[in-house]
Image (cartoon, rainbow, N blue to C red; front, side, top):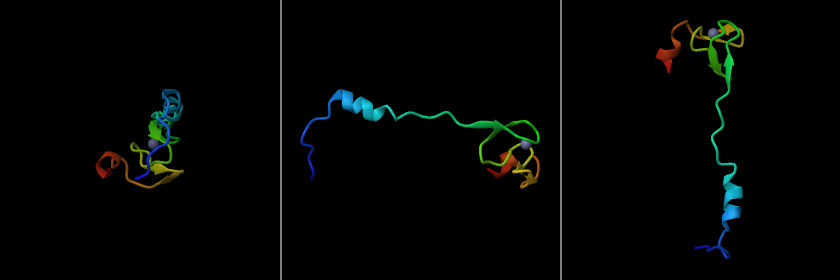
Length: 64
Ligand SMILES: [Zn+2]
């Protein structure tokens, strides 16, 4: 088994872990009904995506 030659110092460990954080979800408003919607997702309220009807209205919560 490969064994590290040197112990990782706490500062180096912290530098590596500085990127370990959760980024906030990108929330946009639907262009049709103005309700909050995740980016690149069908609007759960009106079922529109990119200006066209993809799903029936009120089917958003039931389909997922
Ligand atoms: Zn909508």
